[in-house]
Length: 191
Image 1 (cartoon, rainbow, N blue to C red):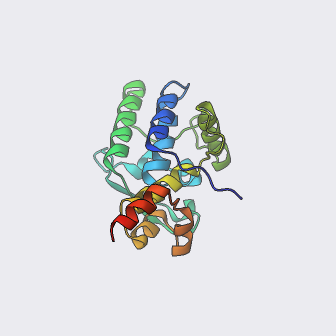
Image 2 (spheres, rainbow, N blue to C red):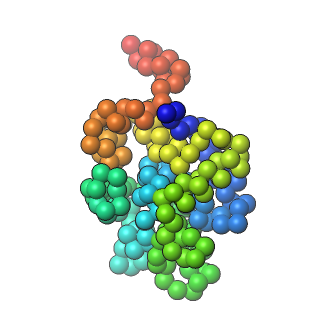
């Protein structure tokens, strides 16, 4: 089976711009950002709630736990939120508050009925978003592959990447990394 395409930074920007013009811009942008900037699987994104992300003061945490029941390996995992994702989450939280005039609760990526998406339905949302910008070889797993590949490109240790991804085996993590000619050229220049 062919692996999902790893998007370039410019392509991610195109997808996010496209999301902003869709019927559900906040939802769609957050789904793409959680996939790319937190490395979450589509099923993890589908089950994620605002309650998991907010502290007692209603501020977004810089790290949060995924529930064991919601992960592929059935083990809880700590997720770290970088500055780009934090800004997107804060913007979404403020927009939701301004529209609802109430506390932000429930699923982060809410369906039209306000409940959780199934992993399969959310994967179809990703497919439509990527197809909307012409990326027929991208999928809901593209963001996760980008996350792992980018960390590897930046010299993050394999063990750290493995833990951030929630993998039990290093070989699993290594399969996600897309090695480019540029990475190889930079590697030999280190000698």
